[in-house]
Length: 217
Image (cartoon, rainbow, N blue to C red; front, side, top):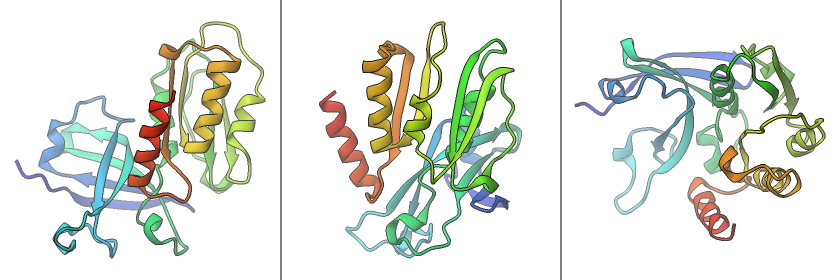
């Protein structure tokens, strides 16, 4: 099977988000419910995806992305990327996760009687996208100038069995983990909370930090 994919569409959906559609025979192996899962892309130092340009003995730059939508009949997937207009060196290859994409797919899978909050952080208000959510899920959009951890921890606590799904920056993840596990005593099996990047750190560096953190918790 050919493992290559090609870009068949690319559109700017908000001032800071670009939606790219990838197509390839290898995507036929993806499960039909893979939306919300992640893929990894490899880049050469110049930002190209031509890995043959990577010098021998040097590792390509790897970045992680969320699958926003899977179109199995076309062997294609949609992935949302953050648009970087400033020079940020190693970090400018990629979005440090298109978080809206992942949250959107999780929200759409909730049962219709679910109650709770969906807190989504974007760069600015123009990046807010329409979402389908159960009637009793309050969707809260905040911008980069606002604190995700403070927003979440300030929300009134609801009754019932609590489940938590969170994907965010490493330091924010630790704040939220402390809040849900230690302050609110949510059982571990009902919490998925993970960091997808750490500010100022490459993906490889972030992976090392996550391993150390996991060993100490």
